[in-house]
Image (cartoon, rainbow, N blue to C red; front, side):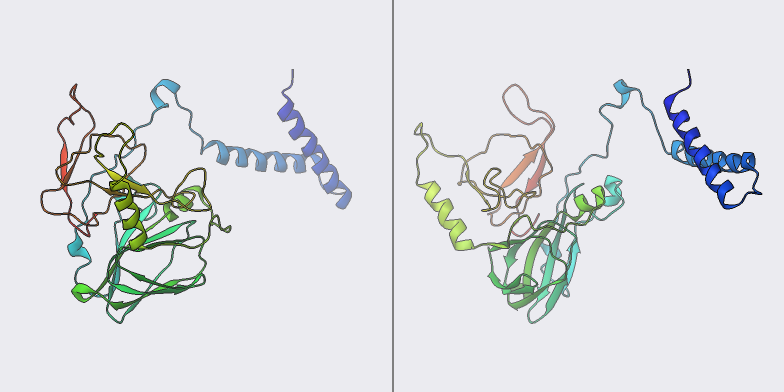
Length: 306
């Protein structure tokens, strides 16, 4: 029995041959059909040359480049000229475009006092956290003033954003910049719809909320071992997230407390906002029967470092 697909192709070939014959009665119909079939065969060869077929058991959970534990110290943004300082590890992750994780790009911005730095990203979401200094950011969404501890997010932005430092210690301002252009690069699209509006989180409001939680007892009367606030957006009431793709937590650990091990279901980009010497995080792949991390990697918290 003739397969249905080749039958359909033959029908199209016959129609093409008839069209050629109508345009030029002297054309050899068999030759025309042969040329059409040859072209179709070449197309099929090109298409099939790009295909791979894998045995399920060995390919269902493919090995991928592991996400490394990397430290980006504050010394990167504490001196030098005005510039973007990217955390670019795409070569390590075997990804074609600039990225810090498979779906996010993080950078420090250093802006010397009186200077202006332009940034641009093809992203659905951009987040800016002010590590140090004060200044103004301007662009198509308007102008906004910022100071240490403030955080603001913007949606799709066609043009450049310009950040001007008015004042700051160590010769200027420092900003932590995160966006999802790597995700856009991966799926091959350019965002064109705003999923939220520009949003500002003032440092005073964030700290006030943390202070309120500190004095709110747990339901069981126990002491909190973490004082965390999620930064939500009015446009994301269900997910309670910073934007529809970015999640952000301001976490404070009281002195002398230990936060028990927990697991992340995605890559974490952490920034130490403030800490005294001796504060650190332990990370590892397994925990023992007592809930302690096996062979942990230690990362000390250094204010302004990621």
